[in-house]
Image (tube, rainbow over all chains, first blue to last red; front, top):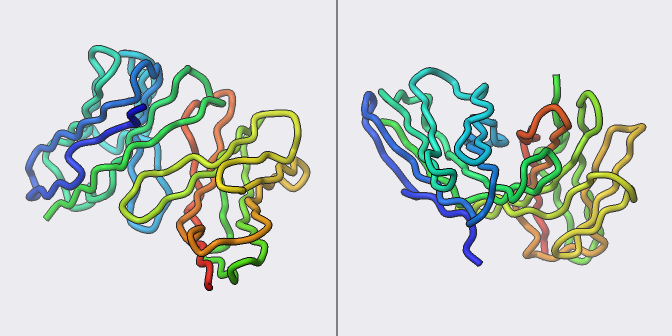
Length: 115
Length: 113
């Protein structure tokens, strides 16, 4: 079956622009996660949804970052007034159930470059 | 604070030899441990996980990992390395109080023919 998909795969933004990154999770997956991966580092947690409810947004680095999953499937990560330090790969993952033991399946990521 | 350490930035192994990629962790409560592999320009692919039970876990592509509670380690192993195993490997941990994965910095595995 289809895996997690993300779009766009690459995004170049000028500093100060707003961007929106999309994630299509595996159909039927309850949990959805967003991570940020800087070059040469491991991913870092941004936010977590269980269906449409955003249960944890403790990893969002500033109030310029906003995520939503209004119908419990597709999710959008929005970054307002982008800064150079926002340049990273943004990874989306989904898991079938809710819980810390459930395997997370990752999309290919969106590479954001802020000039 | 919860953390994961991968002490080696890079591991070099000759094709056909056994390989080990090291991972240690620090969490409060029961740890749930995962290994993922990342190929260039591709997403993270799940290899295996330890939840409970047998300390030796077998996963995809012939990989296995051993959970050692006393040493707080979860090293990834393979008996005979292939050139195609060359990639970036990440160890991650979650626990009962937190669904997010906490990641190590990654280890680049290079298998030489």
